[in-house]
Image (cartoon, rainbow, N blue to C red; front, side, top):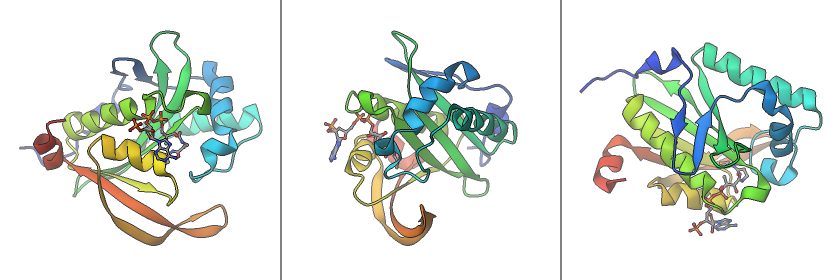
Length: 193
Ligand SMILES: CC(C)(COP(=O)(O)OP(=O)(O)OC[C@H]1O[C@@H](n2cnc3c(N)ncnc32)[C@H](O)[C@@H]1OP(=O)(O)O)[C@@H](O)C(=O)NCCC(=O)NCCS
């Protein structure tokens, strides 16, 4: 078994097809749709970012996603509804740690699309990509206490709740705890996901 992360995924942006969603690069064509997601205080509530308030900020986010991909630091995908092609959210894998073959997952869904299964399908697709295609061993998530919907999505996808990391992150002016959840390659096989 190889003990290296497959960094060849950075040679060409990896498009991932699911049953009802497609994960693809977010281009400037989607500035407005991305703006609707990232400007919503309810979407930003438990996440690290403050809601944005201009289209220019959305454009800067897209440039940042592209730069991170070119630098092989992080992959951010748009989550597109396969029926109408609309952007329903974003998701990412980042903080790749080479020796332990570990990374972190993130995701945000447009509020009008919550509870339709998009978050779960996106996380399932990213787990398969991370553990199988990229040959990672562990995918981690940090969730702000109170974000029960996010914990539920991860549980449904086979993540195990490992504990509470105290005052781990400085978010919006304060130190906040993080619930740490993770899935290992061995969980993935055992669970038969
Ligand atoms: C968390 C989030 C990604 C979930 O996405 P989603 O597309 O609504 O997720 P799904 O529809 O696949 O699943 C949601 C599950 O959570 C449950 N849920 C939703 N809100 C809940 C709450 N307040 N408490 C408990 N469970 C909740 C739903 O019932 C569903 O579970 P079920 O299928 O067993 O009924 C979405 O709410 C979001 O974008 N929130 C804001 C951004 C964010 O918090 N991102 C994660 C940072 S760690």
